[in-house]
Structure formats: C-alpha cells, structure tokens
Image 1 (cartoon, rainbow, N blue to C red):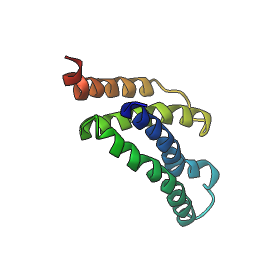
Image 2: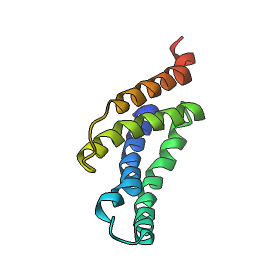
Image 3: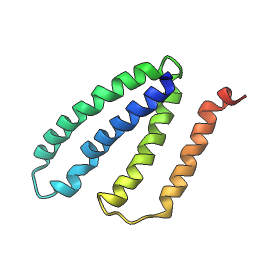
Length: 116
C-alpha cells in the first residue's frame, strides 16, 4: 500500500482516539473530578500516539512536515464535526463549513507545489 494511504489510515484511527481523549470526557465524566478525566484521557491518548507516531514517520517519507500537519488538521476537522454532532449532540453550525473552507485553503497552499 502507498505510504500516503497508510499515513491517512493511521491518522484517521489516531484521530478517533484523540477526539475521545480530548472531548469524550465532557459527556461521560462531567460530574467527576478533572484529574480522573485527565488520567482516562492519558490512557486513551496512549493508543492515539501508538498510531500517530508511525503515521508521521511513514508519511514523512513522501510528504514534508507542513503537509503532514495540514493533513492532520483536515482529518481532525473531518472527524471532529461528526463526533460533535453525533456524540456530544452539538448543533450543526455554518461555522463548521467556514472552518472547512479555511482548511481547504491551507491544503491548497501547502500542497500547491505538488499540483504544478
């Protein structure tokens, strides 16, 4: 499999863990002390790092650091919005669209040398 596809796959899985580590406790542990939420989040984040570190190492063979970071942000937003809507029951806002368009601009600028 091409390194870019492996990187994207690992970053998607990594981001699922990251999103739950960062935001999942807001729904499930809001009445608990923050220290417990932090410890649980660290435990979840371990799995995120076990996927994210190899993803970046593999991705770095075909992309530069800026491209990896913007790719990470695209994946983060792509997974965060459904998570916020479905899991946290946040209302759908037009701001998600505007944020997505800004990210698309970042994708264009960071990858434009590859397009020409």
